[in-house]
Image 1 (cartoon, one colour):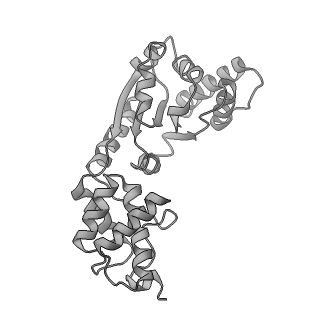
Image 2: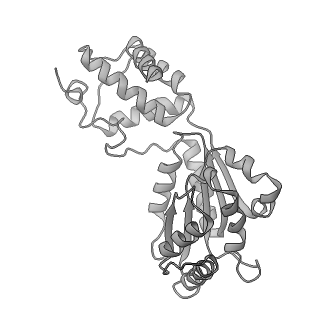
Image 3: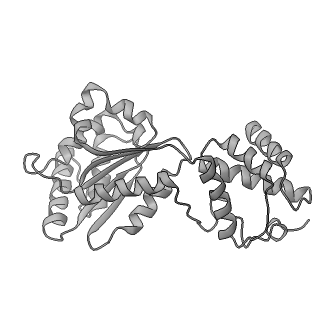
Length: 268
């Protein structure tokens, strides 16, 4: 059987997760980047939410790459189910401070290191807490206290909570009102429009060196209808369609091929 990439004139399969990243910046992506840039300048708490596969991780990763390393120190954590002291210990080490046994010692180590970075190094710590919808209420309760400097008169760090949309519901609980009031940037990624979905597929193919038709219009429409604006699902269905199309020696992916891919995906 002919190699999939050869059949569709691809230098590599652009729809696989581990392939070379081809960035597509739709309107939602650009707006979110604008909001994150504002957060970086202003400092304080930010909230970025979106359904699975909407591109939160890709967005944050590429935003972090843009930040000047001489002005910002990026710290990423996804320890979402740990105890408060485990969270403190991990954050202290990530900031460059030795981890202590007691929570209070870690608390002061974190504040001291943030102050040292901000005042001595002139660097703003950017602390990204991924999968924050799984963070315990105890950790969320402590966040406002942990990042309180000079009796709440100034922010010295960026704290970005990233998670699923239900994180907003959690933060609306009365116990989290003090933290919610501190959030200066709150953005939800809604997904790609159909036109953006077409551009997404086209950009992926072009980025992989393909300059010939690969999907019939009906096939693209079927992918977009099934994916409902989710970039990860678009890639998954395009990849599955290419695999099926290649196995059937099809030089052009049809709507029937996509429907088979959708059925296989549903069964899987």
